[in-house]
Image 1: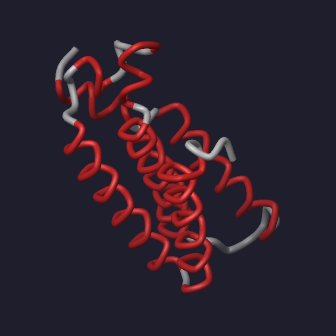
Image 2: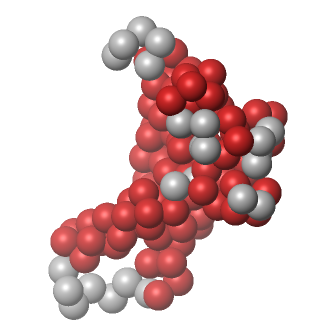
Length: 132
């Protein structure tokens, strides 16, 4: 597969889209169907969930690369479509976009996004190794 395809696959688009949709469902549930939420707000909310989930997937693949080399050799890093260092940079880029879009919606949403990002990073770096 191509390098571009590897970058698409590493963010697990189905998972990322599902998270974005989940956030939209949450907006509707909190605000009701008649809420006056702008399209821009909904787009930013979707992008926050999408990119932060993609970031989590990319950093997870980085830390799982040795296991994936045996169990999932077609994944982007073991297959060589994405270099391990590129997965880190990609995760950071997606994190920046996700946190920026959260900030553009509200400071409260940014706080939730930062907390979620920290949990994701701690889990990927230490939690899995400790069987948490």
